[in-house]
Each structure stands twice: as structure tokens, then as C-alpha cells.
Image 1: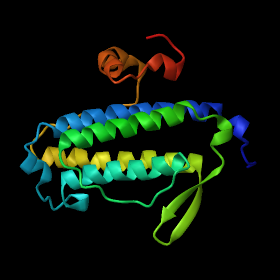
Image 2 (image 1 turned 90 degrees about the horizontal axis):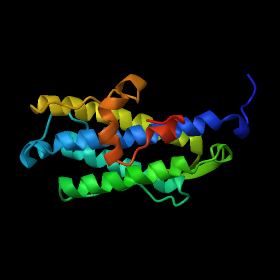
Image 3 (image 1 turned 45 degrees about the vertical axis):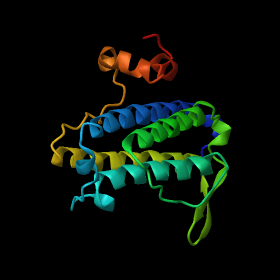
Length: 193
């Protein structure tokens, strides 16, 4: 198999933008469901929870987003856990992070996908391709949102449906919600709603 050249990747940039928009929508749904939990339940230790609780998992998800986004913007900084004070602050920060990811993907040209970026690791800086890093970030988000989904269910809150990816048949069902989030499916797919 021959190596792909950057100019052969225009569809990739479209799909990255769609993934970033789907990420914003999914985080919105997840955090809205989390807001239905009492603070004590949100922060309660759960044996099955990565990082010990749903709250810690949500914080990790956002902190990792910010770590990779800084690196993707060529402003690498070491990973750090943030002591998020409350859900409103975390939701606002997650929304800002999601919008930052959308803007990055919206402005990426195919030639910007193959260069290497720096990821500061405890063992020293690592160089990774921008496209691989973006795909890793999306998989990380999906993985942990799935865990949060299960933790919500265990906490007695109906988890949102997070396994949707903009099927055309469902567009009328999400149109108003996506519009409120600033997501234009016509931009993603080159079609009018």
C-alpha cells in the first residue's frame, strides 16, 4: 500500500469536523443528564468508576481534551488535573473546549493533518502526527462517555442516547437542539436542512 499524500485527504477534514460537532452534541447531552443528579450522587464513589466517581471521570475527560487541544494548537503543556468547583463551571469549560475543537477542525486543511505535534509526557516530549492525535482524542472521548453513560444508569438517571452520528433520517429530531449548539448539518454534509 502506498503512503497517502495530504492532498488525498479532503474527505478526512470533513469527517474530522463532523466528529468534532458530534462530540459537542454528545457532551451537551451527557452533561445535561448529569445535571439531574444531586451533587452528592455525582461525586459519590462508585466501585465501577474509572477515577473513582462520575465527577472525577467528567473532570478527566475535560482535562484530557484541553491537554490535546493545547498540543494541537502548537501550545503544548503538561497534563494536569483540574479541581473543577461545580458542574456549571465544568459544563462551561467543556463547551468552550468543544467549540475550540470544532474551530480547529473547521480550519484544518489536508496539508495540516500530516505534520507532527509535540505531546509533553512525564517521560519527555513525544512527537505525533496531528491526524493520529485527533483520532486518538475522539476515541478517548467516546470511551469515557460510554463509561459515564453506564455510571449514570447505575445512579438512577436515564442516560442520554450517545450512539448517534447524524443519520439523515433523524435530522428533524435533532434540528432545534443542534441549532441551539451552533451546529449546521448543511455545513457538514453540503446539504440544506
